[in-house]
Length: 288
Image (tube, rainbow, N blue to C red; front, top):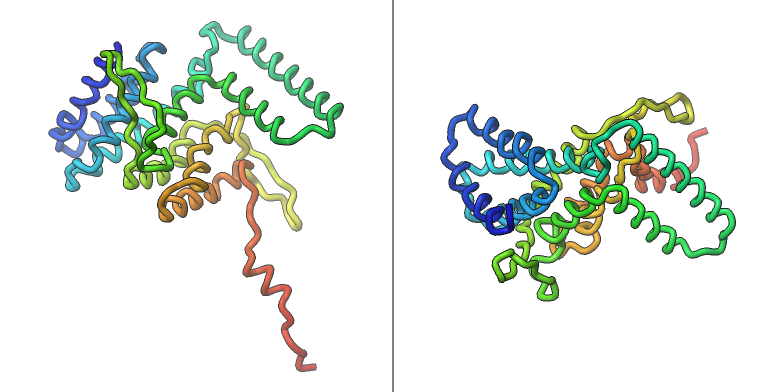
C-alpha cells in the first residue's frame, strides 16, 4: 500500500463511519477499523497508514457532525490505544519474531550498556548533563524505532504546538506532490490529552511495589520493563511549554500532573505550596 492508497482509504473513513448510526455497530466498527486492522498491516505500510489517518482526522475534524461526534472520538481513542499496543510490543521495537534467545541477547546487551554508562558516569564526573540526556534519548529511539517514528507523526500533526508553521518541511505524497500534516485543531488536542494516560494504562504492565513513607509503607504500581515513558510523554511536555494557546498549555500541565504518573514512579508528587506557607506562618500568641 503506497501513500496514495493510504490516503484514499482513509478519505473514505469519515463518510463510511458516519452512516454506522446503530449503538452496537459504532463501537464494533471502531474496534474493527483499529484493533483488528492496524496490527495486521505490514511494517512497511504501518506508519504510512497511521499518518494518513491522522491527516484525515485533523483535516476533517471541524467538519464532523456535532451530533455524531462521539463515535469519532471513540474511533480516535481506539487508534491511540492500538498505536501504543503495537509499538510497545517486542515486534514494534524492531526485534525478530524468534523469541526467547533474541530476548536474552537484548537483555544482556541492555545490561552491558547500563554498566558501561554507569562506569562512564563514574569516570567522567565533570561532563555536562545535557550530553548525557542526549545519549539517553538516542538509546531510547534505537530500542523503540517504531514508537519513536509514531510519536513523531503525532508531534508533527495533531499534537504540534503551533497552528501554522511556514518552516515545516512537507513530505512526498507518492504522486510527485507534497503533503503536510494538519496541526491540531485544539478540540482534537484536548481529546488526545484527555485519553493519553488512560490508553497508556491499558497497555502497560505493572508490578506491585511499596515505598517506605514516614508512617507506613505506601503501595504503588511500578511500570514493568524498560518502557520509554519520557518518549511517550514528550508530545505532552512540548504542548505544555510551547503551546500557542493558554488553555492547551493548561490542559497539558493537568495531564502531566495525573496522579497515576506519581503512582507509577514516573513523576514525583509536588508539595502543596499553600500548605507549606500556612505552616511557616506565625499563628500569634497562645491563650495560655
